[in-house]
Image (cartoon, rainbow, N blue to C red; front, side, top):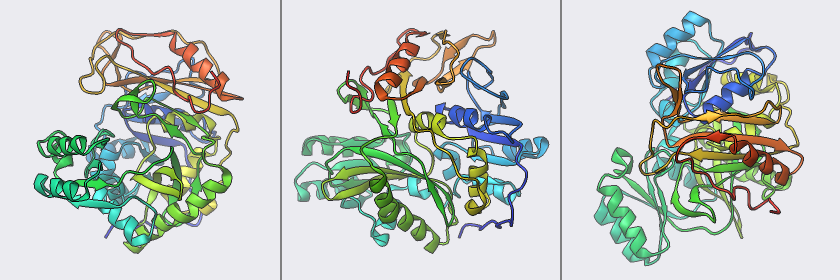
Length: 444
């Protein structure tokens, strides 16, 4: 059973924050946290090519990168002790699943991010499905299988296309929504042939659901929760929702697909029962519950849970959140969300488009020089992801999703116009991005 940290009677001082991770999500979190009035310094570990910059898209104090791997619990602990860190925010799923939050909590730190046991909500699709089934949370019918023969037998018995999911962590790319039985069979064979490594040693096969998708995020302190505006991600690489699945090519928020009434339904039928089911398993879940939902004709159903902020939904949402964010995450970390100030949320429309490298997602090219010439603006941000600095200080690409441009405006047409105008001022060889992100809410 996970260790249950204590719950203080008041919120302690909050001046120094460490964000763990090196992607666009973590850059956005660090940027948002350093805007909070009590916060004097934010470190990010390991960071990326843009996280030591105080540039035209940043406000307030600088962000300091520190070269410690996101799964190096001992190194992170030493840094926290040396710099008197008051709050640790863990961004990616891998360190959460590896127990980094547990190790830091055992060292007496306030950590926003679930224990390894809680992270199974994402790290094991089979575990997550079992929890949903036990708690009566609406989700697609499924079969957990541990061999190719068993999976193909299920497929042949059902006789219709199924969704094929790697059980473990596969960087958002372990899902095939098959349009035919043959496509599902091919996905099963590829997974058991090692396409996803150990993450694909067990599969979950699911019935296909129909309807639009939406992402909902709940900030949890183990007992209580605060919901953020719903967002909509775009997983396919190419315009028209074609091409291979990716980690996400863009997003927008708030997604009008889910009204305030609909969001309350999600709270009551999905999120609160999930938190209660975790409690019943002895898990004191202090972090984000990310519900990936499909809005079906019979109501919202869970496609998947994640144990961290979505990427790029996080980049989209952070500019909408008020300066109370650091205190709210701290309150979650210490189990006292009831002591947190109310989180203010801007009513603007936020738009995000990801610029990816040539060859993404299968074989992204690295090392391309990046030029950025964005004007200063309170409503325009650029968050780095797959970037690094060379020894000579040149900014180059180092991953599949290179960076994202985000903008806020009174309507989505204006927000996306600002994003695409901003992308015109970003240059690297092979730059790839969709031109139709937010087509659901754009008039042109």
